[in-house]
Image 1 (spheres, rainbow, N blue to C red):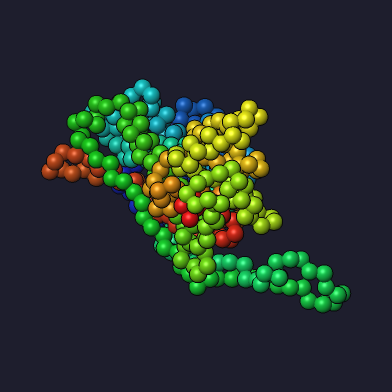
Image 2 (spheres, rainbow, N blue to C red):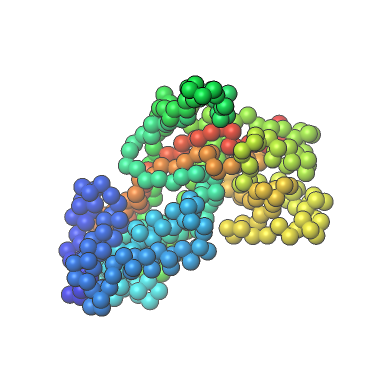
Length: 392
């Protein structure tokens, strides 16, 4: 057995991860790192510094997604994904499994029994990385954190409107107090997942890259669904009284004009700026037809971002993305609404690690892989989102 392989990865693989309170992928990454520290060598017997090797893996994934700026939500998401997938990548290499070359017999064929427990985490790693590629969640939230809790206790700054300003007080006089306190609102954490099922005879001769392609398709749709959910919570609120948003209205009901986009931007108070807006296909077509966006100078800002058509807001401070999904009731209205979000304190996402498990359905000769996780969206300052209802 080659140096670096984690032996006897069986059902205990998942039980051990649960007992440690972490996801299976993270558990595997930690075991691989421990092995490299213990032996001082990688799976090929070469001298290796685990910290440097992990950082190289992180850097490769960051470059793949365009090296987002440090301290951004997207940067943190990519780093977390890299740390989760490090162990499975090294285990596949140690066992001679190459994603772009081999089919699934490497996991399930003769002599591959030791590899079968790695199949679910292999697909899970594809899911995690692919989900970063789609959706706009990271542009609308100020944090994306992991937690295994079933509810989230919401907290908020407890202050009167006048106390938000820094006061000049007499020497020796008390300063106004801002307290971070718990709100009497528990935000439920909901479970999301998909059961991936296939006949063993089909799976074992299918190229691994093809199977991963379908997993990526599931992940891309989930990224879209997450974006829709964030939009819904930002607009309707998370259950706390006063967390819902009151729409602004166009000058002419049912008609979207350039001046309405300006009004939407100016709805933000000092200190907040609308950075990310989502526009239905119908409204986006109207925007592209406006004379202000037909102007050659204006069109310098029209193009693709995140593989989506986008245009700058009138002030140039934000970006309006064409958003095709109607999974959100908020966005599915006839002519649509246009949300504009300042992510600085808009909301944050709480999610559990991805859980992947495989079952054999003996009676029908099929396998099932369950990919699931829990997630909640907790709203921050309601002033961080403004919404234009075109049909107001």
